[in-house]
Every structure is written in structure tokens, then in C-alpha cells.
Length: 437
Ligand code: GDP
Ligand code: GDP
Image (cartoon, rainbow, N blue to C red; front, side, top):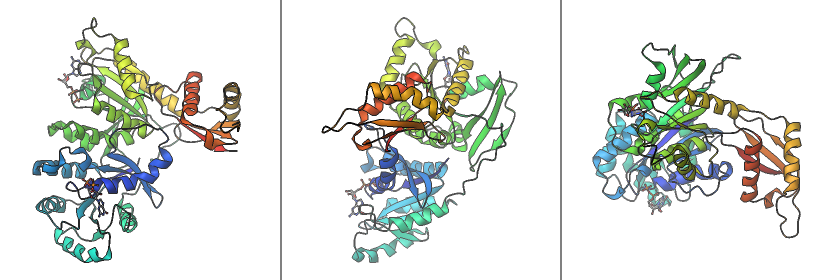
């Protein structure tokens, strides 16, 4: 569970340039899945050994040139609700604009750590112009140049120092419960699902505060299931404040997703699988969480025009290349397959924890790679000699080869498909690495 840093500020100050710099290095190492073309307003970063998530809230605000005050207010309040630390980016070329002053006014009321990054300080000449920004009334200022990275190190030193201390979740042996987060767009049926499970008798037994201030685990112990439902204060508040902007629900899911083992992604069958569903799915995948997709409100679908199989095929097209994901058709009204949904989530949880012994794994995989080795390059044969599952929290596999640098993505996909055929990793993102032996 990592902390969340939000970047706020008006358009064109350089938020996305800075954001890309923050997530770049990390992405290069971790994101081995190629061809991800979705908007990058969320990413993982790491500084001084501390991992955290970064949200560029401005990246979600479209048509950003004539951004309204109302939009700014939303962006800032979202950042305040959903993050642990806020970086407020301003532009030294422009000085303090009325919009900057408005953001500062909103931020001054908050107690969360706020860092003013004065961007585009490319030369020492511009250093003199930065002092004006003390007038924002937010304390220390940090001159940076997002473009070339200067000053960002000093800023990040302070930012990570201000992140909340990550408490170890103290669990005694055998007490470790799966953590499920029910996520999805507004109106998909998430509350109805939870209410249907809880029933009038309130089977929920305890409310225990989670590892951070505003993530709450609620224990569910009924019908032979025992797990924690992950909720966040932000998501609860949503019920009161009517959000008309869909993407905010995605942001509100971030903390719940990070805090969970398995995400139960609910979609509304009458609307199909849309862009925001895809974003939430991607967040789960990116965080290497288990995923179950529930196609809810199945009672409303005319089964003559749309069959479950057709629906499934369409979803799998949207979520490719990670398509090995269970899809369950539910209705919270008729209570159709609600327990099946939980069963599936438990199965995914187990799949994600599965560990294959090294000897068994070699026995199974070596014949596969011998039968179909990576294609030779420049007359050089590539030989995989040995493989193993790494002792990591989520399934990761390493294959040792003489020339790992010549093994290309299609071969990696081939290995992944084979792995998924031979073992049950349904609903679980897996990582495959090739290393020098
Ligand atoms: P956003 O709208 O706040 O996300 O801003 P962008 O990251 O898209 O940047 C807006 C413009 O400022 C772009 O033309 C960037 O190239 C430029 N920019 C960003 N960072 C710097 C910097 O450190 N120095 C200079 N001179 N320009 C920058
Ligand atoms: P949330 O915003 O995801 O928590 O969605 P809600 O649980 O508040 O549900 C939104 C609306 O959809 C409510 O009017 C529910 O009664 C309705 N709804 C939820 N699940 C179903 C379902 O399976 N079938 C039908 N027909 N309606 C549903």
C-alpha cells in the first residue's frame, strides 16, 4: 500500500512534464507490458527507497484552456481527499495568476503537507523571480525545472519525508484475511451488492481502521466467507456529494484498489464496458491486483439480443492483453450469482498466492521452451536453461537464458499463455522476466 502524491495546478504550468519525469524511471523498470496507450494520469514512483503513487489531477480536466473556477475547486478538493501530500505547481514565467491565488486560498485551509513547486526555473536568472511565490502563503517554495529535472531532487526529498509512516499490518499467523475492494463507476450497483450481502441483520462484525487514516477494512464473515471489504473515506463521502464527473470515481478508487488483494470490478450491463471501466481495470492490473469482473443488472438485459458469451467476448476485447479474467453475470435485485461472485473472488485470491516449487516448475516449463525456443537472432541460438517463480507477493517468474536481451515480447506472451494454460492464474496479472544465467 503506497502513499499518494497529488499534483495540482492550472493548465500549462508543466504538471504533466513533471509527472512524466516522476513516473518515467519506475515505468521503465516495472512496466514490461508494452502497448499501453491509455492516459497516464496515474503512475508509480520511487524516491530515496520510498514508493508512492502519483496522480496528475489536472490531467483529468479536459478542455483545459478555459478551465472554470468550479473545476479548479473540484480538482483541489479531490486532491485533498484522495492524497497524502500535495504538490502545487506554478509557473515562474507567468508569476501568480488569479487562478493560482484561488488554488492557494483553497489549499491554505488544509492541514495536509503542501509543497509549492515553482516550475520552469531553467536558469539562475529566473531564480530571482521565484520569491514572489512566497506571497501564496503556503510556506517554503521549491524552484524546479520539470523539463530537465533540476531542483526536483530537493523537492522530492521533502515530499517523501512528509509521507505518512507506513505501518506494518500486524497479523498473527492464520489471521490473514483476503482484502476485496468493490470498485466501479457510479451506479454500477456497488452499494446494492454490499447491502445484499450484508442483509438487514448486519453480518459485518467489525470495523477496524486500516493502515492509513482513511482506508477502512470491514470484516465480512457469512455464508462460509471470511474476508475484509476495503472501503475508503473518500468513497463513503461520494455517496453524499453527487459527482457528475465520471473520472473522479476512478480517482476515488485508487486507494481502495491499492489497499486490496482482489478488485471486484462491477460494470452496468445496460451500459456495457466503457472507458472508465477500462481505466479502473488498468489501475488494478497496474497494481498487480487480482480482478473479477461482475456484469451487474443482468436482470435488465434482453437475453435474446445479447447473450452472456457475446458480452464476455466484447469485454475481453477491451481488456486485452490481460484477458484471463473471470466474468460473472450478477443481479443484486434478483440476487443472482452474488455468492458465485464471492467464490470467484476467493479463487482469484488463492490463484494470486499460488507458489510453484522450482523443481516442478522446471519439469513443466523446460520441455515447453525446448520444444519451442526463442527464435535465433543473427545466427545466435538462445537457450533457456532454468526457470523459477520468485518469492514475491504476486506471481513473478524468471527464466535464465544465455542471451536474454534477444528475447522479444511475442515470446514472452507465448510463455505467459503457456503458463496460464498449465496453471490457474485466472484473474491474476503475472510478470515474466528473462535474465542472464
Ligand atoms: P500542464 O498543462 O500543467 O500539464 O503543463 P505541460 O506539462 O503540458 O507543460 C506546458 C508547457 O510548459 C509545455 O510547453 C512544456 O514544454 C513547458 N514546460 C514544462 N516544464 C518546463 C520547464 O521546466 N521549463 C520550461 N522552460 N518549460 C517547461
Ligand atoms: P453504486 O453507485 O455503484 O453504489 O450503485 P447503487 O448500488 O447505488 O445502484 C445504483 C442503482 O442501480 C440503484 O437504483 C439500484 O437499485 C440499481 N441496481 C443496482 N443493482 C441492480 C441490479 O442488479 N439490477 C437492477 N435492475 N438494478 C440494480
